[in-house]
Amino acid sequence: DRYVVDCMIKNNFNLGGEQSGHIVMMDYTTTGDGIIAGLNILATIIKEQKPLSHYSNIIEPYPQVLFNIKVKEKKDYNLISEIKIVVDSADKEIKEKNGRLFIRYSGTEPKLRIMIESRDEKIIEKWQNELKDVFERYLGGNNG
Image (cartoon, rainbow, N blue to C red):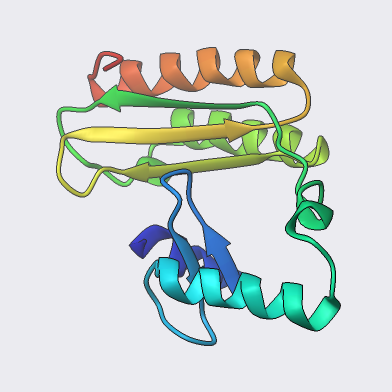
């Protein structure tokens, strides 16, 4: 939840979540809490007097890929110009297609975690390959 909350604070979001099912509602707590999320869903259903199925199409899922890069050392990759150029280019193109790029180091393993999300699967594939190549080249890891 830590990275979700950090992103929420940075972007002034009130609602955030992750694929594991954790939902964070900043009005109530800074951690994923299923009971609070469930109670808020029930409150919305009662207030709006609409069935749960009414809300099922609100969020449009995009194709997404998650992958890890093994690293020798958790360096600030933004200080490595070759990596920064590729990351900045990827971020720009992915955002232009209403997608997202999220890169962070694992908190427990020598790995870099990368998530790419876009409606355009060709964009995902292109940047997955390019990011994997540049990070492995400069941070000394293998995909894992």
